Length: 304
View 1: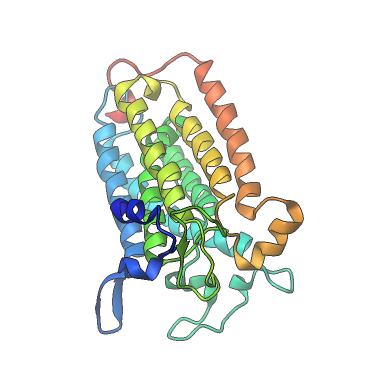
View 2 (view 1 turned 120 degrees about the vertical axis):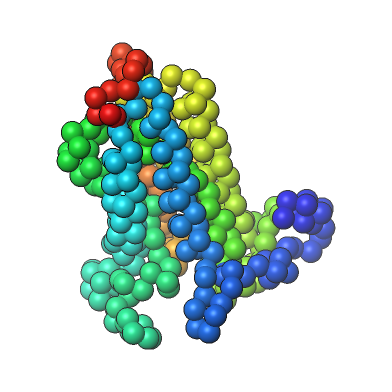
């Protein structure tokens, strides 16, 4: 992929996404398609469970394997429900003031309600975050665990899902960027995109919100003592994802139904929703730096 982009970098002709030979699904059997977007969620969750199971074996871990098992279930549920409800609430404007996802029953097939048609697309990161936080709070209260330290351990694993999800968006030719004249600009097949050269903003997001943040958090967890400072890892994650999303939104085309909102306010909906993340991430990181480390000895009672 990179060699293709590099080779096309100095060419006069734009890169056509359709020439890359990508498909939104891995295979299909009859009417069933195994879509890469679904695989992104599946692999992201499986990685998180596998890596979290390794993380909690470190000295002073705030939870045991049984808690990780509970988190695997509830966080997956939180991502799906929170992500979908967040998208429906913030990204599907309706003429009556009620988001259209809640009132649209025009879909074809067995399920017509737009809110439940996840295969049609539409998941919001901010909603997913709220769902995961609710899941962590539930497991922490039930297991009498440190909410902040559990958040630290979960946060390290989230960027992998972000990386895979954005690569799936690119693979689907969706969520393309704004018009540009950069050499690596692309023309996407979606009729709404038109014959306009655009930023492959999905790759920018995969890089900053996914790959870069994943490497930073993995290094901090495994090579430093950041995991012993409650709030440090989740604070850096929140601050990092907020800044990365805010910057990337300058290159991403606003959702069609929110284009007027972006033009009117000067920022996209994603940027407005990201500003609180940046502030919260900064506050939590400062809090973590100013507190004494904990759990640096043997495993805590909660991890037995």
